[in-house]
Length: 345
Picture (cartoon, rainbow, N blue to C red):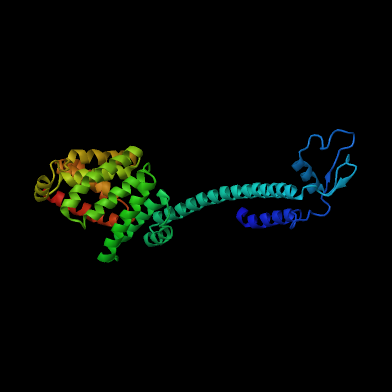
């Protein structure tokens, strides 16, 4: 609104000032300065400078009481320069005020606009509208807002995991997601979500870059999950993912472990006990927040030979309401594990 009024206000102001500016080398008709103040107090107006007297005549168009006679300006060039300077200064001040107001309104509108987009994005995410969410956020892929960028990284990854996404498209989306997460982290290193999604996206990229890159990336992944937990100890997802990291390296196949030992002096390693600690902590922070955390609790207890607690968590995973394709996969795996578990008893 302010920006739309700005040209109109400046033009009106310029038009008002233009009427008083001298043209060529001739003084403006009707503009006269007093030669002397009555009462014998000298040859200038008491308490006013020459430019202030000019302003008085400029604004009122006539001499105030106390002046007996006037004559045409004695030095039209000096007066012209003084008047032009005063006029331009006034115009510049008015312009500055209008620009300042416009800048504040524009910045405020930008903040509200980002908040509105984030609200729409979160609604679509909670509604499971994966492709619509991606289409919305890609409209703002050049944004410098970290909150928007990490959501775009998540949306890109979610589209990549859809069953109807081709392998070629999936690979492109995985790398695209990593780029958005990286930018989000660059814009705001204090964002726990940016750290979390950067770690997730690096892990995904590792699937296309071979075992060496995957193991090397493991250190970076762990670092960012730990940072995400440090920044937000109440984010159950970050805690769960740190548990997944531990579980993955606890059950690393012997041949991968051998490669890791050959390539790295101190390859990443972990234990099932460490993984269990993170899965339990995630469940304490947000009970039943994720079907896969329930499943991994059951699987970890199986690895630790605690069949009673394994059965408890696998049953919870099996009975978890299936809202997503992943939930359905979790139910199927939990059911299969329970069946095999029962057959051994």
